[in-house]
Length: 405
Ligand code: ARG
Image (cartoon, rainbow, N blue to C red; front, side, top):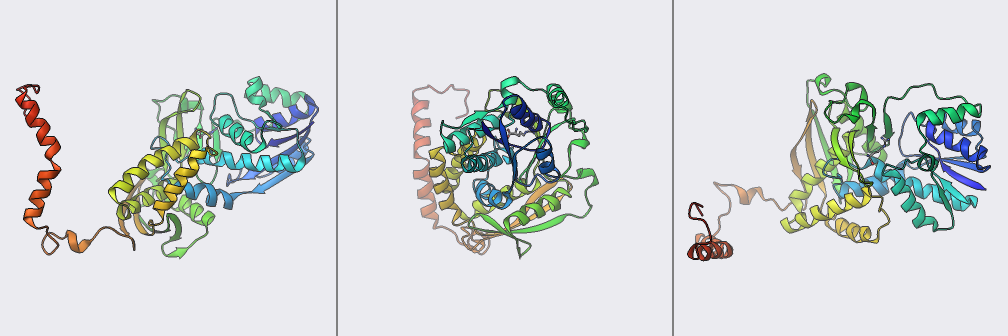
């Protein structure tokens, strides 16, 4: 049997590699997808071969991740439950698609991943893999199947004579270009403030510089293209924002998240670039879209985030939503000026060739005024429904008399 394993180099997937070889007697091909999880990639390939992989694929998917997953998320102002920029959720379908590609190329009988049975990632991996590979290729998830714990994993590695990574991990971390997620340990107490040690991408606002950081982000059709007037590639713009904005203490999230699998979990994230880009993009939309477009888009945006969170990247309805979101993003071109100061961020200016705002018209002293008769007439018609209802109900005394209306 030939198995293609999504391999991160961590304890769980290392144990799975050994299990698949020693217990299943499988030939294991490992795949590591680089979505910007800096630091975690060092020595992964060596480790895979040391544990008996027959072949290792290291796939740099950073550019694709930003271009095909992160930028669409910016266009959709993606924040699951208004809070989480979906870093992990966005990376899963991409990693699964690379896994499927290798599985087809290698003629594998099965694909394997290290997701647990109580998380969202199993849903995201399994659905994407099934969509791409059909039912022919088996999906093996040993952590889910055997409820592998840390202790069990260490035991299995030791039993087969392999060294165990010595670093004691206090938290479960998942990181990529879009966000860094920290779960577990003391964070499981929803009342306890996250200790400073959980944060790596963001400075404590208390230690942030005393001078505010001003930034100008240029968008073209909803996609960020320039930073302070300088054109930047997709990966570069995200990385630069993470480090610049993070150094001013902005980008921390702490909230109770609704998982797909019926549990609430306490989630802590760092996502400076994500929060900044979504905030700026949303602001520009307010300037260029009509009220109707804005309201339609906010509904579609929420649906988009739910679908991605739930692992339904491949849901046909997402294509329709994407078309509408893209169509409205045609006008989201312009520059947004931001001020970041000690953990806070504010949009302090914006401009766009598609602006629907007119400084000339809005001025109270010199600007445009409607014909007073027209204004009066408009208000009369506009309020007919409400005034008629109030009058009718008063007459029928169905409104309590102490009600001022
Ligand atoms: N709760 C997030 C999600 O489901 C992130 C999970 C990341 N995993 C981790 N072990 N930190 O998308």
